[in-house]
Image: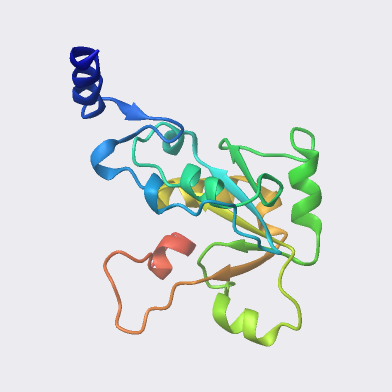
Length: 170
């Protein structure tokens, strides 16, 4: 029994833990809330397929912290009214926001402060900048909700997208 126990303790250093498949050294499970956080806003995470297989992905962590009915993850590159009527309905609601930076985007903090109510739904695109841009521009549904951004550029940053990123020309 002791030998088997030591064997399994040794294996834990090499295997990934479910449900997040993170290596033990970067496992965040002990830091997650014991019970889902209660939020009034629904989140729709639009995840690029390449993000789904990354070992250090964060979407499962977010989903584990929220009630199942408050956080929906949809993986793909293309979404349409025919293929996803639920998402289409969400995008058409006047109190739905999409978190995506750009010239049309309102500042998230200012929007929340100025708004008498919280948004019912926020759509978030999960992927690299180029993957997110590809998803946003190839899906007309995502241009229906009010666009918001949490990015400000007071001092500039090489890691933030530029105007050229949004428009395609400098």
